[in-house]
Image (cartoon, rainbow, N blue to C red; front, side, top):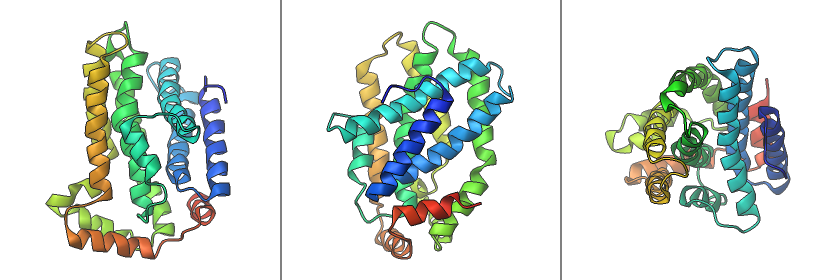
Length: 251
């Protein structure tokens, strides 16, 4: 499959991944659905001209998406991917909650891919020129957070327990914040951008290792109580990916 060059290409390729995951009952389709929903929202905002530089934001969004699409296709073909994505892909058959499977993808894509895509897109230009649009994306995603939580509650009836877990200081990792993740990614993007074209592979590897550790925390929390509660949440969730996605997508 050729690399995406427009957001429409991205949406079509994400649709293909979702369909493939339904056919194979692969939970990799869960993150793909969430990512498609957010990408469609950004595409709508670009079409309406709501960014300072709409063509540049689309270039960034496509570069960002291609890092996920490349990782997915490389993994499917038995090729090497980043540590963070390898962990997410390797956990696909683990008996974890729907939210945890989605968080693996969010963690790898936002905390690793986004900073690389941003630094690459702004290579040779002042990175702060895109900061306002980068932050506007944060605002747009925040606006659909409640919608996504409502959709997740359709397939995870005990999702309210996650809110309780988020109040435990030792397990704040469960209360994953997209806004905070994107803020960290912006800081990492500035670091990579400052290193110049091509970036420093060691710096990217260092970020990758930190993102991997975060995914490991998402999978294996520190306390028995939290592990028990996550198993309880998972027990009452549907196991068929087609069922999960049908409920998530329903209007």
